Length: 387
Length: 186
Image (cartoon, rainbow over all chains, first blue to last red; front, side):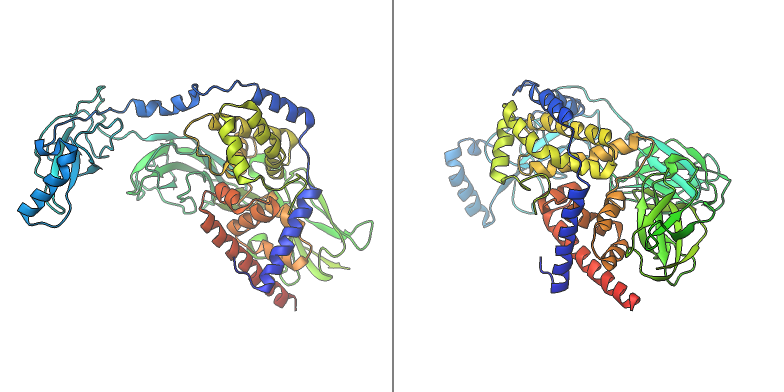
């Protein structure tokens, strides 16, 4: 990593600060806990054979139709040592320089062409596939056929044999893909609605989006239908990001939400039930008192604790500005500190924490989500001349 | 950059060897546990700020680790990074189940704020607050949690190269923000 001198100095300061922070805030694990956990873990007898968790994870795959494939190739391919000779003869006869490849096409739809999906390059005269790569578009319930063919590059498949592959278990026909169930919690907070949904578990995930409506009808579709709207701020392609917020147009009004997971084609692959919430206006913490502490060089700030729901609280953020008479964390005011305890009601800034001079202060209650922060409550601005 | 945990990194070959042996040797897993326990516990504690919760997260992480190393399919290439990733997920799971449904504090949470608070220069602290959540997260993982590139990239679920690019950009952004702070102050 190439850093200029200033960046290098910054990196060094960050490293020093990290060392200090880890040292000052370090809490060693309790000895009893550490020893107890160690004993518990090492006492679990090692067992090379047993892997129950893995077995459980593989159960869904075990239910997929297994296809065993075996067939006969043209007779001149059957003796491996004659293969190069045979290939050379064929190439000479055909006048083609390109190398030959054998492709296997798997398809089970009546209209499927044998070259619809190349599953494997076959290196020898016979093969079997314990776990074949199945075309995702295969129709369940139909018997797949496997057609090996000897092809020139770019040549259309002309099957030389038509063996059939039979699944070892009977697949169940599923007309439409099942939509996974997500759970959605919509919590009405001061200043917005907190949305928290369960993580989508499965394949083909592309993104999440949550839709809003003024009625309880939100079709599982995108673009939104039936009066639903995409409020924005809930789209994410990170499957692990499962919380967001909405600041609906009106406070005191019931809004309905549905969170959905989509595949790359905007097809719904997971959806929650419709859940409602009512957001309130941003709450007021009243006045913020700012003045000298016992040590007059220090600055003491006191405020009324936020009395709203704990679910709607992440931090108090104390901010200040020398120029903005209405400082806010969301408009670039300088952050003095963040306090993650809802029960806190005061903070002392030691001398030097805040530049001397006329300063405007404010305390704000902020709720954090995976996709952003929203303002829950705030105090009136306070003015103080920092010594 | 040794922290309070003693030697900061485990030799990669030794780690691979221990993980391989841990598939059938409880003592080898014990050695891994002894080395990583304070690190994982510290990583969790800095985010949850509560001893009992940090213990839950730590226990969950090592139980998953034990199950994983006994699985023949476990990719034994970066155990430490994998462990931090599991711990990060455990923090999210715990928070999600608890009353305070805080998203992982890694985006813009108390852990980043605590890191910022430990900076020794006002303009650097202020500049940190101007960075995006992702940039703060990258700096926090690298410098506050003291993770190496392999470990941090595992936590973030990105490649080592991507992490290096993000880290460079975050430091550059911090430099720019600091310059702006200085100009504003003047």
